[in-house]
Length: 237
Image 1 (spheres, rainbow, N blue to C red):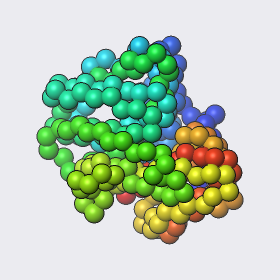
Image 2: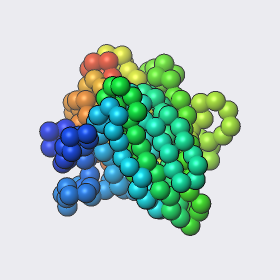
Image 3: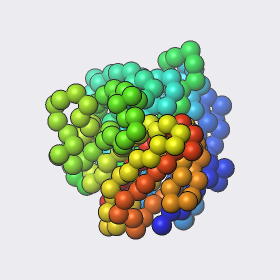
Image 4: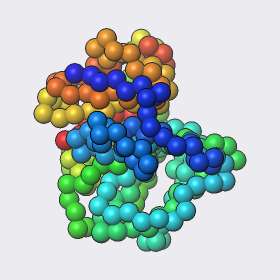
């Protein structure tokens, strides 16, 4: 089963420095049919103007994954963590018992991100932050795990997924037009897929750039690129 959620149907708000689109209910946008997808709670499509950003603010008990589509985002938090995450790369913040952070676009160009929130399976742990490069070429023609709550996906060697404290994975792929990639999901789980760029087809359903595809009751997700495409998918419990 695939439920297409066209980009034009998303909620959102334009704050001038921030143009935010919400795949799920968030802030002043509420849709009772789009409050979550399994343990996936938020998928925001944010466009951030140069030399602007989110001032310090708190979070707790949430896994927050930032996928940078264009530009770069600079993170600072009250634990002393700081880092700059560039296009194609990923950062993860486990809010745990509580953290305050700021996210700035310090670049001279617009930054575009997907910010993904997943409800944690484990709570009561100390907050943490980390980032890792994931070269787009390493994802050519296949899904690669970017962040995961499963121990088999995490480790110390280069290219391993960033750890998250939840029963979920965030995966990405880059496909040339005409290429097909598969992801084994299982009928007891749900997936949410968004093309950052391009357009793809899943079981006869066309999914354009920045559309959402809510997928359930599938053993294997088979994605064929209509155009050259960059994909992000959450495998949710």
